[in-house]
Image 1 (cartoon, rainbow, N blue to C red):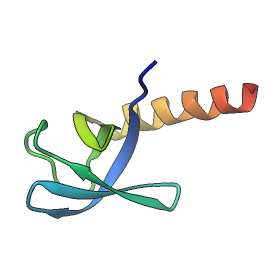
Image 2: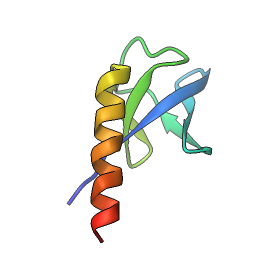
Image 3: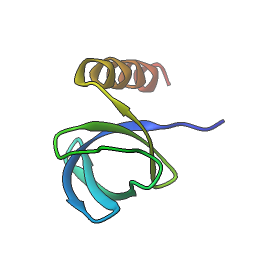
Image 4: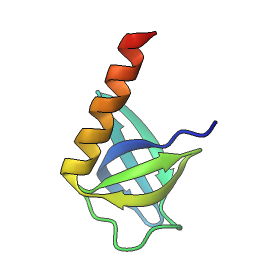
Amino acid sequence: MCLAIPMKVIEIKNSEAVVELGGVEREANLQLVEDVRVGDYILIHAGFAIQKLDREEAEKTLSYLRQMAEMV
């Protein structure tokens, strides 16, 4: 099963972004998604941004993931 995680873009350097979730920062490749800006939420899978999300959708998805984690 594959899982993509919504993360917030905090910095952009060429085709790479620094993204953050819960205080954890990672680098993500932006070559698959157009028009990404600092402050945007993007879905990250295997180090690549695969889709932009609006803030509401990102928060909703993160809430579902937290609920799933509490069940285990």
